[in-house]
Amino acid sequence: ENGPTELRPGTHYHTRKLAAMMLAAKARKTLRKAVTPMLKYGDALVFDHRILHRGRANMYNEDRPILVMTFAKRWFRDLLNFPRNSMYDEIKQLG
Image (cartoon, rainbow, N blue to C red):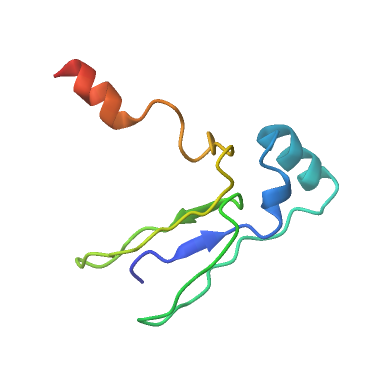
């Protein structure tokens, strides 16, 4: 298992007020279990980038190359996944 992507179906509706919406969904028992699609070499996984997702641990000593392409309206800013300050900016300031 080289760290497949894990998705939480339906969470793209919760990302505006994430903590409150996730808690409410859990209380109402509408929070769906995470899924891990098992893909083969050459497969593509396409999903709404607002859905909660993560890469699981890579248990092999092999690289896990991926290609990520995000399409959105020009005005949309995804501050949850891409905050204004990056780790690179902080390292640059230290150097």
